[in-house]
Image 1: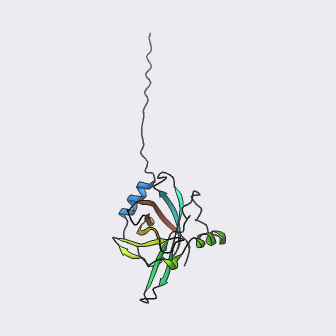
Image 2: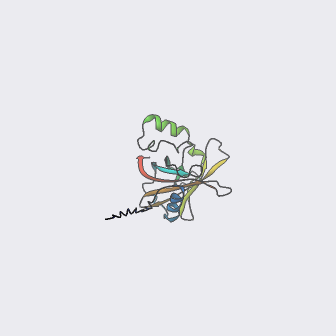
Image 3: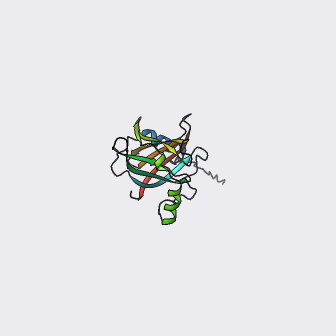
Amino acid sequence: MKSVFTIVFLFTSFAFASDNFESFKQNFSAAAEPKLENLAGWHSGRCYTSREPEIEKAGLMVVKASVDPATNQEGVKIIMPAGSVREEVNFWDQLDDEKIEVASSMMWPENMPFAQMENGSLANILFYDMPNYPSGKISVRQNEQGYQLRFGDIYDDAEWIYCRLDKKVLGE
């Protein structure tokens, strides 16, 4: 008597939603105009860059409340310190004096204009160490996951960085 064995292999593919540059870009596009209350402070989260679109990185956004001396109106300035996008994914999640000092040394809020609502985002031009030369445009929106940030070039609309900032790590 002859026995026949049949072996069946089942291949199943699962598609898992993974974060990357494109998914953060879509999250930003779908997010709404941010609420300004409780926005001032230091916010940490995760970012993806156009240079390394699959690699998750740490990100930091600082929002400074200020008064416009010309109009005496209150407003905010959105700052993404140079070097705030870091390889160590949780780098900004816990701040200490050294990290605050390092980030503060990379911010020049006095050179920046006040953020304005623009196409559903709170946006302003970002300056780093050259006060007369803008470094790019930073835009913020908000959804249930937190603040969604886009940083790009102001001249050719290139998109460099998308972040989700969902943890307030320092008040104003």
